[in-house]
Length: 200
Image 1 (cartoon, helix red, strand yellow):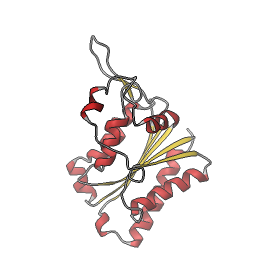
Image 2 (cartoon, helix red, strand yellow):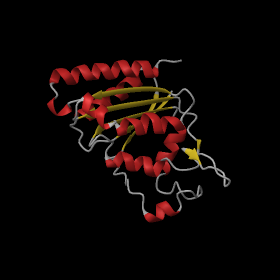
Image 3 (cartoon, helix red, strand yellow):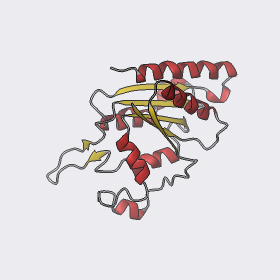
Image 4 (cartoon, helix red, strand yellow):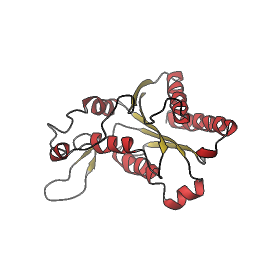
């Protein structure tokens, strides 16, 4: 197994960091080859500039400046996102990573000139995990529509292998969390990872 962990949080003292560490430890325990892309630590630039947008569809140029990230996407067969949910979606840093790195020729293939739909490009990715924290409650997040979860578990998954296995865990009401609730959530993360990482 080749697992890519895309981690996005500005503070190493955060609970989200503890979740990331739990994920990495679990991957190491099963002997998975693991890479972590820590977006804040790497000072990833999430801005899709006018220049970048101008050659977005040019496969000879659209990986410029993001070569490491693109190579990691090509390398992995498992991708796991660990991030806090802010305003019901992923942080701007993570959304910008998706905007810049999921480029044509890698994540998907543009439709032919005569029209049609895009074609998936990440068919080698067989597992996708999403682990997040939410300040809002479960019911409020559901009422709003959980756009962050939808982007990753529907949008990104649609580019992956047919039957791509998914797992999700969120600690809701994070602002009022307790030592006990956080400990219980880490156990929940373990269970969801066990499901995700178990061979078919």
